[in-house]
Image (cartoon, rainbow, N blue to C red; front, side):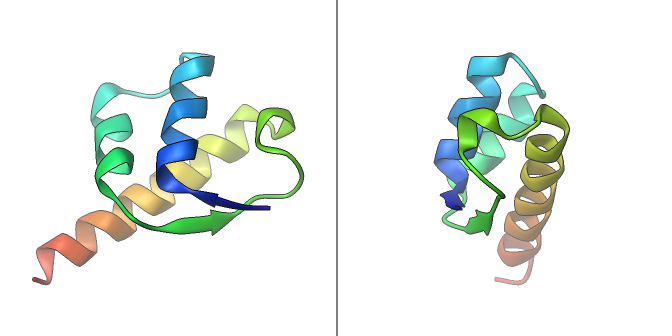
Length: 65
């Protein structure tokens, strides 16, 4: 399933996982990632890994502009 960064941030917030800085960096990103299965059934550890990857990519794209 393709998931955008905003949906990922919302799911992490719903699960009460991650730091506010991670949530805000995901909300500001316009990227997507692939996750196996449904977003609500994906293990939390995999969501956090995907979120960190998207947040890093968003940080790198803003640093290069």
